[in-house]
Image (cartoon, rainbow, N blue to C red; front, side, top):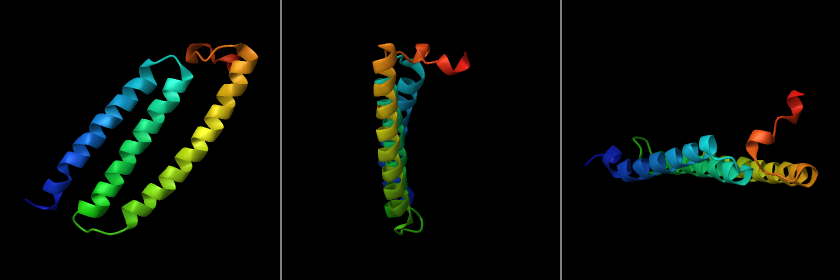
Length: 105
């Protein structure tokens, strides 16, 4: 079994996690669930980066470093997203994504 054969279970798990996150981000109406789904997709990307970094054709630390940057960006995204969501809930009293179109008017 080659290096790509060792990474197959990790890549399969990452693909499943990404698909679950994509489904949640596109189909759910609650903004908290949408944010959680986006985080699930980012974690699937991190899993891919680490799997390719460790078990890829040319192993190195590049994928792990990109994964750390991705975790940092994800943490900032969650902080800003939750802050916006709390402000929206205080003003409008709902977390429904379908009603978040006040910028259109």
